[in-house]
Length: 206
Image (cartoon, rainbow, N blue to C red; front, side):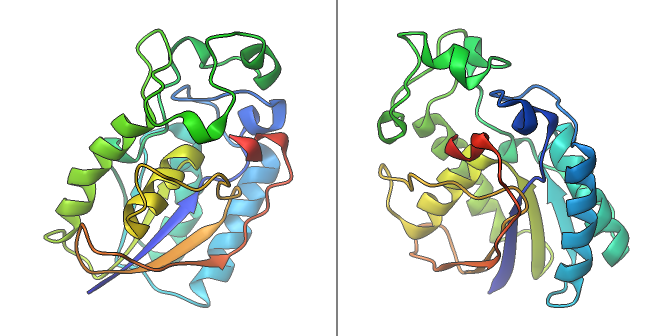
C-alpha cells in the first residue's frame, strides 16, 4: 500500500489577479514562493517522501522546488496532473468569463461541459486520471508527493472517493495537502487534509 500526498500549487499571479489560468504558465507570486518554502519545511517535520511528481506547468514546478530541496529529490513531471484546458476562457478574468453565455458558471454542471476552443470537460479530466491512478500500482516509491491544480484535485478526490460523476463543489486551497493510503484504482479511499493551505484569494471558487 502506497502513501500518496497531493498538494495544490501555492498562490500564482493568476490567483492574485483573479484570472482563469488554465494551462497558461503563470508563475508563483512572491507570497506563493514564500508559502511554498514554509509549507515544505513544515511538511518535512511530519512526513517523508521518496519521489516528487509535478504537473509540467510553471506554478506547480515552482511549488515543488522547495520540497525537492528539503528531501534531496529531483522533480519528475506527469502531463496527466496538468490543469483543466479551458479553451477560449483561458487567461480571462472570472468577471469576463461569467459575462459569456457559453461559460458554465454553475460548478455542479461541468461533467459534460466542454469549453469552446478545444477545452476539456470534467469527464475528460477523469478519463486522463484513470490511467494515472492505474499506473500507481506499478510505480516505484512507497511515499509520493504530487503537485497539481485546483480543478484536477477536485477530480482526483472524486476518483479516489468513487463518487463520479459527482464531485466536490469546494476545491483545495493554495498549498493544501491531502494524504491518501492508496490501494488500487476502483476502490473507495479516504482523503485526509493534513495541511489546510493558505489561500485567501477569490479563485478559490474555481
